[in-house]
Image 1 (cartoon, helix red, strand yellow):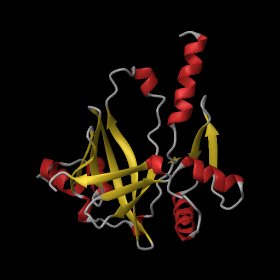
Image 2: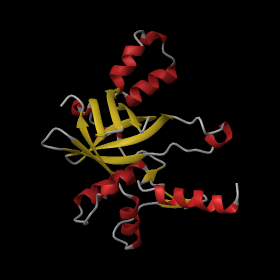
Image 3: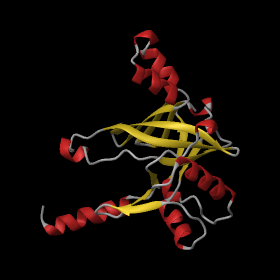
Image 4: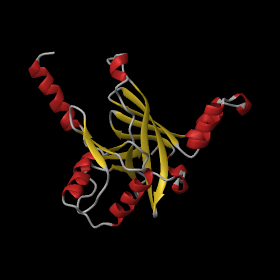
Length: 217
């Protein structure tokens, strides 16, 4: 690749990163709370669809005889039985996520982790360099039956850290100085508590909001 092309590729990476990513989950086990209202078929645009199913329901449908499951499979079931499997398709590109629901006060959040995505253009060596991090989104149920998913925005968190309004362990790493939270789950959860209680203006950036409308409306 020519040097000019390298610079263009780096610029695209730098400007495409906007949601906050974390090494550790944002939730605490005792705060996990499943909400059936999220289950269903949704659309956020003409080319973007969301299929949300219960992890427990999907898992039990494929594994009728639990006695045949390995210890690792049983452990995975116990860990994610309150979660959702989310199939997100945008412009014919598919990705699957495990989304763990949890409460911060009375507010519902989802901890997103990708576990499958289209990668035909990605060779095996490049794939081994990728780390499946966590992101967090606030679930805001609307009166019209739609749902707004509001991701924690990188620029907002960076400004809070820069202005000393909040503290959270983080690193800026890699060729593109990727911003990643390195705090423990307990610290991340406490951060969300303070964030939700704050009077910060524009704490939810419109660029990282997805409005899901039910397909059966």
